[in-house]
Length: 175
Ligand SMILES: [Zn+2]
Ligand SMILES: [Zn+2]
Image (cartoon, rainbow, N blue to C red; front, side, top):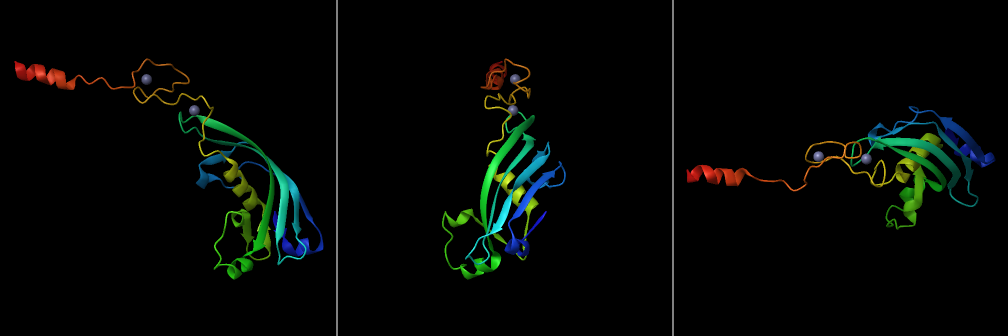
């Protein structure tokens, strides 16, 4: 859905959209959408600004990724409120000599006549996924010795390698 700044000049643009898995491409982020993405909210042009747009709303979606520890599918249900500000990219050119501070980092930019809701949602979803993607906080992971999934099959492997190579070599040279 295209959020048109021209339309925002006349009225607030409300959205209430559902995107089934596959409509938004997450393939470069190593995550998949496993349930419908629902987003609702309002986009408005802020008065007395040089084209600044505020997009406020809420999204719910179920995402899936490979667990960092055991490689099984890990589920990430999201339910996020967002309140975002976007300036036209022409305004960026005007301040390009100014260092962007922490507060400015919250500000996005749009090019041309508006922005795609899908791009905004995609960015919000990626930002809200945890840095460490695990299936559960107490995931035991893959055993480095036998390669088994320690959540499914407890193994008795010792984590410190037992090295018998040197002693047996010594026995041979002694003979
Ligand atoms: Zn896991
Ligand atoms: Zn093991």
